[in-house]
Structure formats: structure tokens, C-alpha cells
Image (spheres, rainbow, N blue to C red):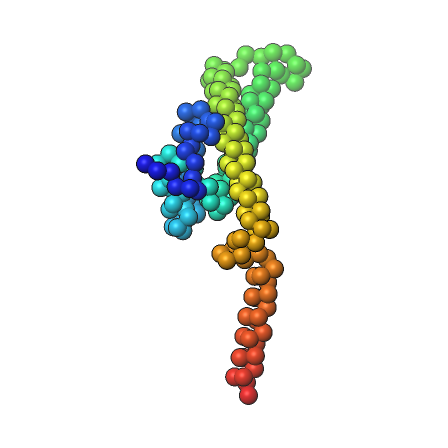
Length: 183
């Protein structure tokens, strides 16, 4: 299968197998969250073919998705570490003497610690993937800016100068039409 120009095989991103699986899963999730736009459908298709799409929209979407995910994991980690501290504090009475705590509480404590360990691994993996996606996004934005500076892309990608002058013309012709209706 030939690789489209604006995609890179996800096996060439420097990710391990777990991270590749995570990337593919979250490309699908990010694409479905973005609704049925053509770029999200293309990103979803690319992920099922083991590709990372390199168009700016897909990368920005994916980057934002991973940022949100990291915030959620961080919030969960904060919550769990509070819980573990609460359980740890229950082991002492006010005078600071160790008291016997129920086996169920000890089990809960170990469960919390296990969840924290797993989430920290997930956090590191997702941050690694996010950083790679972000790196590609920056490179592509720089390439686009380079193209705009060289002027070769003015055909299909107006620079901000062009688009603002278009808006201005559109506005003035629109307002003169409106005046015409009044008279």
C-alpha cells in the first residue's frame, strides 16, 4: 500500500507497541469527537491503516485531545493520592499512636497505589505520544509558513494579508448593496 504524502506510518514515530496501540485508539476517539468532518474521517481511516495523518487540522485535533487526556489523568492522580493519604492517616490516632486498621482499608490502599502506578505509566506514554504529535504539528506549521513566505502557496492558502483585504472588499460591497435596498 502506498503511503499518502501527508501521512507517516505510526511504526516510524519512535513509539513502542503499547504506545502505537494507544495512538491508534486515540486517533479514532479524537476523530469521532470531532464529528463527521472530512479530516476527522480521514484521520480515523488513517489510524486503521496504521498511519498518522500530517495535515494541520488532524494534528491540532489530536494534540488537543491528548492535552485533555493528560489533564484528566492528572486530576485522577491528584484524587487518588489524596485518597491514599487519607487511608494512611487513618493508621494513627490523634496522639500519633499506630492503630489497627481493617484489612479492607489496607486492600483499598494497595489498590489505590496500584492505580496510581498504572496511571503514571499511562501518563508518561501519552505525554510521549503527544510530544511526538506536537513535534510534527510544529514542523508542518513551519513548512506552511515557509511556503507562504516564498509565495508559492498564495494560490490555495491566502496569507492573513490577503484574506483581510478580501473581507474588507466583501464588507464594503455588502454594505453598499444594503444601502441600495433602503433607497
